Length: 350
Image (cartoon, rainbow, N blue to C red; front, side, top):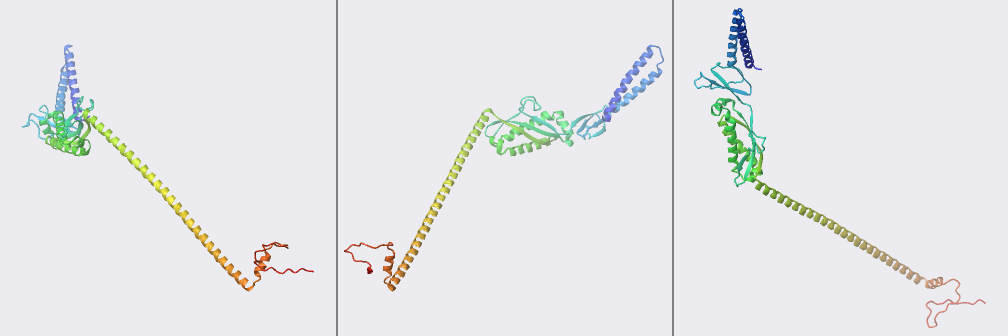
């Protein structure tokens, strides 16, 4: 509780005491008793009530988030040029009065939802883009009265600055800026640029009228039913196109994978064939080498046999005899064939 309110309460209590003292004086007078003391008490209470009432009308407490505009009957302009600053202040009782204005942040919301904005029902902003599409904008304006311009705001707008300045100014600026952008730009590509332009224009216009724009919030954009349907169809078509592209890419990857598998199998077959051919070549070379070695060995053997026959003519007969079956006594040969080998003479023992 501030001091000004406390003084007002005391003044109210003193007036109640004064009324009570009047009742006491009247009661004592009706009974024929001495009322001198009661009259003195009544007068003291009356004087105290007047003093307290005068103080209560002269003391004003301004909160930190407020400023006071003094309406004065003694000032040349009818008001003080400087607003009252926070704290306990004094004005001339009965000749001056104070109108309190908040300088803290205030929010004005315009929404399509019936219960969200300051005005019940649909209070969204209907705007038309440069390509003729109608959209509905939900927005909030956060603003404050400039503490140094409180007197100006009072003179120009009084307490109507919200309904008569902030609301129409915001709606007009939003419509003007949106009309410079296409619907696609409003939705996505240049939305940030659009918000910056709205914010800058509103800041300048509010500063001209003693207000400060704290922030502009674009809450939502709603399209007409026809455009919303066309956007939905476009999105469906884009999604289908993306799905088709995904399927094509998937098939391409599968084809690439199959191609790589086929190439791998072909490489394996080639490597296997090369390996088999190399093995055949190696085997052929080995067989040829073996035959060569065998031929050389046979040739050397024949040379050795020839040398042996040359030095030992009977060696062949000996080999012939050794290869006959053991115990052979008679051998039949054709009569018209000469003997390949000379037969040994058979001597009959006697």
